[in-house]
Image (spheres, rainbow, N blue to C red):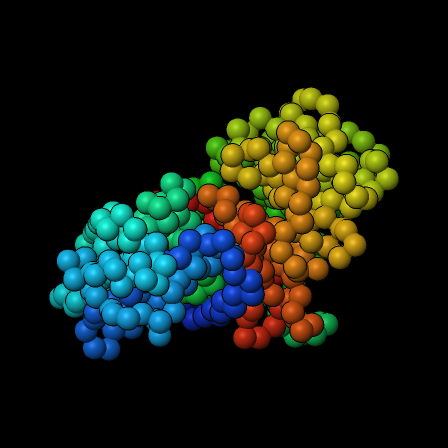
Length: 427
């Protein structure tokens, strides 16, 4: 019977996936005044192509906070080949880098040729030809953005990654909840789960193939793991009390989580294959919101053992060490990919803000201007943080660069958006 129910659920979920579209839209709320000037010239292209490849690349680079793309109206010329570039024109506009290209139709798809030019050095830095189906043009544009970003900054681009988030629409008992995955810019959304009961805390597996999350569909919270592509899923926990905040270990073999099966909420680690549990914390306080260190040797989590929410670090089998001391509220911490800093929610004089703390110095810096931030999630290259916040009384997603100089919002056309989770690199 369980196999039959699982198959039926998978079929329903796949149907939902094929029908649902709830794209988010980008609203750049703060540019970086120190961003590198770049021009992405409109690509020469055939008629009736479904995507503006140059616009997607320009938006990607601007959203990163590293680049300030030149407005198209300010371009003296619009070359489409590197050989046609007059560097003096672009030097006069103080443009440091230039992207030119063209798109042509092939049998059933498109061919995209692009070149990255160093304007001050008057040289060609990068050139490539990419083929894709017409329905893959956005993905191809994001891959080009990744290449350009890495060529200039030396940091791997994360524009081809995805985000997961939860939406809710309705009031009271009529509220409907959906779990979506979308491109990192909020487009190409796909619904992977729908429920009349709350969905919380989605977390990507390290290979990007699965999502762990909390669902209340059985009448009480349970932790589920679902394959994104197939919709197949399994319930891992449904203990009495709290079942919350699942997060994958870097090797994908274990899930840390908060359970209250023994009384107070404590941190546990589950071996996914055997479903054996290891209790990590032992206290009379509330321990929740675990996150793994990049090397998988320790966890950080939120605890109120000092009288208010603070972040603690603990190796498996070791003793807890408090690591946040600025203010009386620090929660929901996540490591930067290099393990040298954490991003968290900090309550200061301006409300609940995303903050970054250097682990060696202990220095904490608030990022962006969102005052009701929650649920931060870090891009796999560590350059951006996405989080949930409020705008006009509705829940929306916000983003801020790791240095706090650039920020954006990702509102939905309807309902509230919350609980974002940024995927790992997917290729």
